[in-house]
Amino acid sequence: MDYLEFKIKCLDEFREILIAELSEIGFDSFLETEEGIDIYAPSESFDREAFEGVIEKYREEGRIEVFEGTMAKVNWNEEWEKNYDPIAVDDLVYVRASFHEPKPGFKHEIVINPKMSFGTGHHATTFQMLRHQGMLDHRGKRVLDVGSGTGILAIMAHLLGAREVEAFDIDDWCVENGNENFDLNGLKTRMGLGTIREIKPKGPFDLILANINKNVLLDEMKIYADLLVPKGYLLLSGFYTEDIDDLMEVASPLGLSLINKQSKDNWAALILQKS
Image (tube, rainbow, N blue to C red):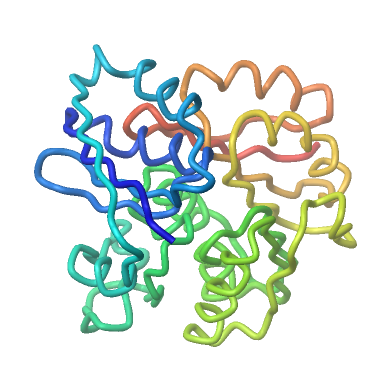
């Protein structure tokens, strides 16, 4: 199967925005370059209308130029290894691939094999979720990771002392990759496949982690609230700073209060607490 290849030139601050939005419309592989990003999608399932909609949305502001081509199927793991760098979240955690050397000076280390599932720590939403996790006591707690991706947040919960971690995702590739990453980091949990309504996790949970997107968060907010213990915490990301009011309009009547927020590259992250 051939892949469509798009070399996109853009301003630095638009790389992560484009990666996040394009990942939702069928692009499964991304490589950051000096000028922007290279992105790839299977030609047979490519949605050109959706792609052009995303590009036009940011073209002028992001100074976007697009160059299109085709290529044969690629060994994405090999390509990613050439371009994947470790990241550090303060002194809390060092996130590296298995082919990188450990680095001292951090409280925790997470090893993630870079197999293109979303959530390696490089994106602003994942970075902020990890930082927020470091602010909360996980010891002896039950934690639910909604839309787990690579499993990085579930692994962080495990490292922070959670008694039990449950995780799931709607993408079978994420589930396979996530379970491999769980094994690498000593987490015995197996990731489930499906939506929260299909998985039907059995609460209550002390912490719920949901790094998805605004529409899913709004749709599932009541489920999160119902699954939380009183005084439990809901950590949210995957949306822009201008979306915070819309989310709180739904969360507040459910007894969820905002106790902390942060933003990075216009991506927001919230800690809510159930009354």
